[in-house]
Image 1 (spheres, helix red, strand yellow):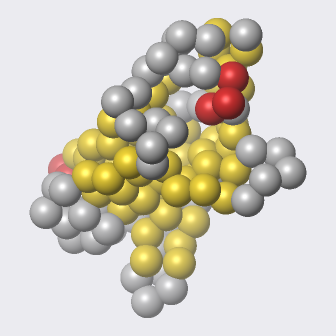
Image 2 (spheres, helix red, strand yellow; image 1 turned 60 degrees about the vertical axis):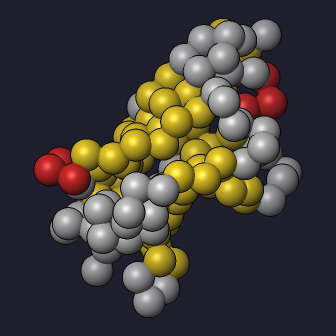
Image 3 (tube, one colour; image 1 turned 90 degrees about the vertical axis):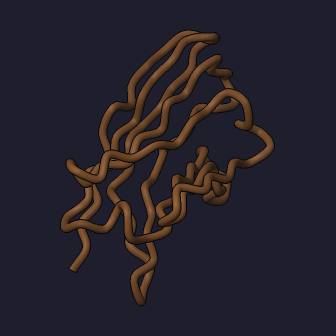
Length: 114
């Protein structure tokens, strides 16, 4: 059983920064493909960023150059550093991993005010 717990969301002004954390059960963050998604009200859940077991990262075009995914294997945690935040980044952010099935955290709300 995999458990993912996100934290770090909150209210921030346009242009501000937040760092999200995803604490995972077990030593999975370095052995698996970890992903961040987000879901705005009334919209589908969209891919934001990923990091594979080798450390290779990928980003959606909408966040490239502003967001950075990283991990701390010793603490089994994946991070999402979000800079230059925009109103359109407002969403619930979810951590995700596939291990035979999709596992999701409960999500953390990010609200960017203009």
